Image (cartoon, rainbow, N blue to C red; front, side, top):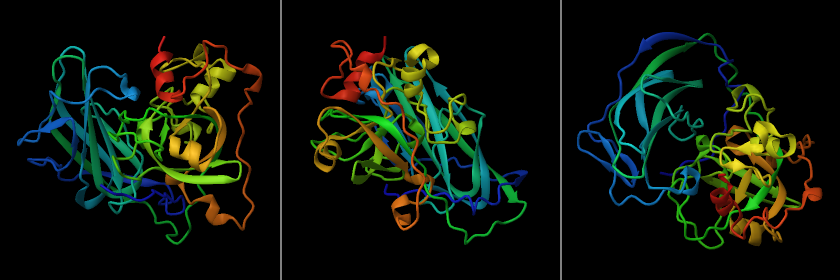
Length: 362
């Protein structure tokens, strides 16, 4: 399914205060859900099971066992909502996992980030009213097959206390300077099911909450290296974490003790955060974005497998290049690591991020 860049606006932020009426709208429980199934069998009664021939899990999810996902088509509701309650049942044999994520949209085109790993009975709140919802199911197994069924999404109506000025332009998307690595891994599959081609054009970020659908561009970044700049979709997760939304304000981050724009793996490497460890092991070199070879080599001409780049998170606002006639604040720059040249044991392989991920888990 094809989407465009999400550009939320604080002006149309509904001026923030939404008074929930706590009126449940009709729940969605389609008899046979429509969407994109990848390694998942969709039953006529609306259940989901991991296929026996599902592909191996991507690096972001451990490289072990079978992995499958289902991304639903957009579900339209008759009334506006800002909260979704999810309920479902699972069958989880030993060594298996199931995860449910949801997101929302006012128009079925521009989407919020995913709210991930929702337990049955949990609610997902969105910071603007919506009329569309979408859900994503992720199933993983090392032996017997897991399943998820009886899924229901119940929206809760919300009434704005007042309406903001709808004509106010959205903010400029934030930009941060981070360490990056070349992704490589040609022929392998990304977390959204994309098969990596030679000299491909996409990136990986360390949060499943901004993973685009396969072939989609719901979440895009602008990467700038020296005097060159490229826009690319987010097709993979990693390399060091799967839940580090470091681009969000501090109070919205999973790592809420870290400031906005400071990735957890950077904090682990430079500051000793979490005793120097990230989700995938001890951080031997900082990298908060993986960049596919076509961008790394052809667009940027970078020598080696590591670099420092500026990253703009385009689903959060307007592209700053649209504001080229206005002065822009300089992005915050991480410490240089030139003085910490890796030892032979620390050197990332040619396919830096993915292989680093596999060897990082200690």
